[in-house]
Image (cartoon, rainbow over all chains, first blue to last red; front, side, top):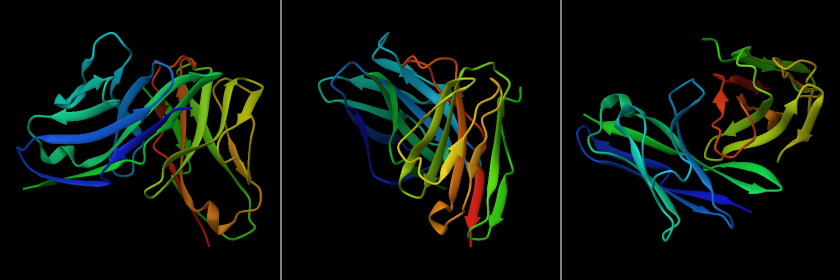
Length: 114
Length: 114
């Protein structure tokens, strides 16, 4: 069975600072990994996904994530935070277990300080 | 591009009342999902469907029912509303259940049971 853990339910950064949101996964088979963003009163939108083609994945809005198998991690980063990045971010893992099971993390709320 | 559309956006119910949350998608996706989102808990899968006429339980199906008579529509029914069902409900769809396929979300229905 797979699982995903997001460390830190709330993260605050200053505008212009590095954004680092942590995601660790557990899976007995090669996983697919996703980051989604949720703005207030909206649904989840796909930021990026890892599907084994490349370990460094670039997404929308300047975000990227690196798949590290040895660390079972898929952390999300952005070099310079913008006020518009304030949102909740969800990591998700999908792996074959009979059928594909899609598991979401509990989310990290990012606050950007002026 | 409508994508996944959910109605209503907000609703207040009294304990014991029933209601149907509507979800429709125009992407011709076979796979559709209902999630509930509670603060700090991430998304929990209620029911999913792999095509018209086929539905299955997710992680937290108790108190809910679904039907899938067409590819486009996947309504979620609450028969006897309880305070524990106060939550934000999201409908999602995907092209296939292959693990590398992202899910597309509606904007949610915010439901309060009083």
